[in-house]
Image 1: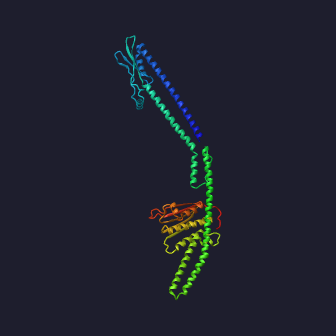
Image 2: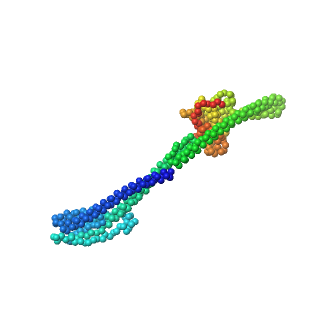
Length: 460
């Protein structure tokens, strides 16, 4: 990059230098031409004075008029004429210089020795015609033209320097903009990587250093993409292992505790009948039967949480809608339940993979548990839909107490961390936000989006 910058800055500087040289040559030609014109006017001035003294009488008015024109002209440089008759009347008055401008006053303050206020005169000379008429001519120094020329040269030099500085700045800006243009694709790539999109790749870049960075970022993206795919695969295997362990525990609970509790309930019922004549003993037997019944209901609810019965029916595929209906119904049928539950499952299940269907079920299960047990909600709404592009959107909204932040809630262990992990394992996105505006409690809205499922639905 350094070579690229130096070459272009040198080229631009050379172009500016050539332009400045051309301007300086033009200025030199202009100054030489002005000096030539001034010298010619000075010669004409002396020619007219000679003609005034030695020419015919009828040409006096013409000579005086021409002398007045030359004296008043800006072309006459460094000197000025004062011509009077024998009685002292002014025939050609010295030119009155224009008042100093603001720039000239500043220039005089910065360089006081340049602007001289004295105009030393030469003469007077007496011009006597043959007819006896006299004229008195006085030539005085007029520094105004030289001062203006010096000021013009200074302003011109400052203008050239300012133009050169501006041109250099523009050239450096243009060069740096061209040199750093490949940074934008690099920044775009980094933005993709920040969003965990490691499929983006940088093209070959013009500068060697930028191209090296681009190839390094591509290599890094490839490595991160492989690592992310491996982690997702491992996460899916872990979730599968968890489901298998849930199924095993559910079977153990059902086979061991279920049969034992059934036997205990039968024995307690037998004791109740056998102790009809012994009220205290019968009360204990009835209490024991009640304990067994509550324990049996608790284990049945735990079995439903560990493994829904529909998953163990042996069917090739189980409807997600039926799973969610059963889950919502189980919450509605709980004693003392006053929370209003809504379920809107407008989803196309024909191409829904079983792993994703189970993930949606677990997300709904965890969201309902949080809303019912921790949020103090009075209304919970669950919605699933298939978008126009085939993506799956899941949402759970409640009017509970809400949470301060998703990260803080995940650290407190209320299930959001597990939900995020499940959504991430399926390359989805989980958003956590306030549910409703204008209510006394902020509520909570959980929203997950999954890409359109690929063709082919594996069986459970």
